[in-house]
Length: 413
Image (cartoon, rainbow, N blue to C red):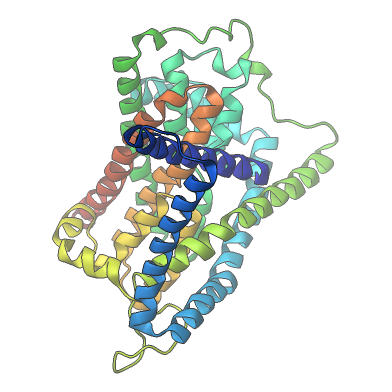
């Protein structure tokens, strides 16, 4: 898992490098002469420094520099102790449970139960249910491992295989997210959110297939290299006695959970810290800054409150600050769930919000940071834009569905 995260980061870095090169290419065309490499780097450095000092300069001007720095470090420290280690513990436990479910055939049993739903809901072969379960139990890249297996991909047409990126991502880290929300006392909201995520996954997968066929109709053909293979050969059973299989799956699953837990640390500490400093205001009784954790300049909250009537109707958010969760989930769902305990402390979270958080967190699950690498590994890099567009719409539909399902259930019960 750590290696997968590294490869994802590497590919994202290369994508950023290509964008910068295209920008300089247009600039060179206007100047009618090429720029030196050092000149390009100097321009990029100057632009970065302007943005960097402008951002932190405004925070320091509002909070004073010492208090801003102290808040920055205290927030990251508190997130590490109070949130990251808690999420890591959940990842370890859920990783062990997931591995045991896989080892002893429960995953294949669930696949057989869900198989009849795949064609009518997702326009995918029944074996795709295995991919949904695997990503639900682990993370987004699990679907790509299956997609490269000839015993799995032989059942797909090319456009269907490409849509697995959207299909699998919609369930990424689902078990961890649901366990986290349930552990906070919002099990009902988490289950409603799961239903919303399923709706979002249907929208995203179907849209991706439609976008792909409209632009590349030649992909409506079987996967060429998958002419042989047998679904029955897809096995996760290890060798040894029942006791040893139990013990190995328990320990190996826990080890995988540790990897996931470590992988979310940068996202939670970096992204969540910045988001919180742009979401919450001063903690002093008279509106002054104390330099403690979770303070900041509430720019996101201020902007969201200006149009919160939209978010209230779509998602049922009572406070504009709650929009920080779906914004963070775009890049990393682990960082997004790191915001929830603070929202609870502030008293701005209810069951409806948790349902929306679960739906959008599961459906998006950091797709902006994984879609490019996943499609690149499948050999369809040209479809990255379409996949991201389809999944953005799917995630919004997931959140809206979760809210209105909650409203409907509230009226009935």
